Length: 239
Image (cartoon, rainbow, N blue to C red):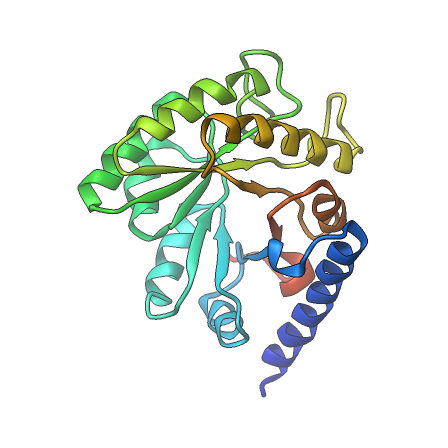
């Protein structure tokens, strides 16, 4: 085993222990929570090691980094999640490799994703990114639609050819009433998920929590946690 593989294996064990402990504390079965490893800024060689270690879900936030990496790893049994703010001119590329886009936050993006998915003859999973720091009718500092926009946007996704409405995602806000209150923020997202599922029962994904706050996300009811540095460590960014 190479030094890097040993490092990643040890880190995965620690993260797995954290998730398992959080599930136990919340009275939830471990299998209710899926780990997504955020591989942004890390090379394709790390993705290959992760796949060899059993990771099946990876996430990226910049198409210019993700597209060549996904192409290099196209032979691996991975689901790629796109989690960054997405410009419409990058949509065709993202749809070529991503199984899910977790950052759907405006009607124009829904239209572009639908057109690209239909052209590529793919079904693309979509999560509505909810900004808990956004004013009514607005968007958040880190992307995302204000809570009052969830219902409309979800309806557009559900009706769009080539798209599948899978659920909701949030990033713990740095400002507003939920700043520094990660578990409260994630609990609010779960409440919105419950409302969403009344109209769209299959949209049951709740993506929340990262390396620093995955326990709070699991306690709140998240189904997917997005973990980067706790698995991959802090390394120089790719240029």
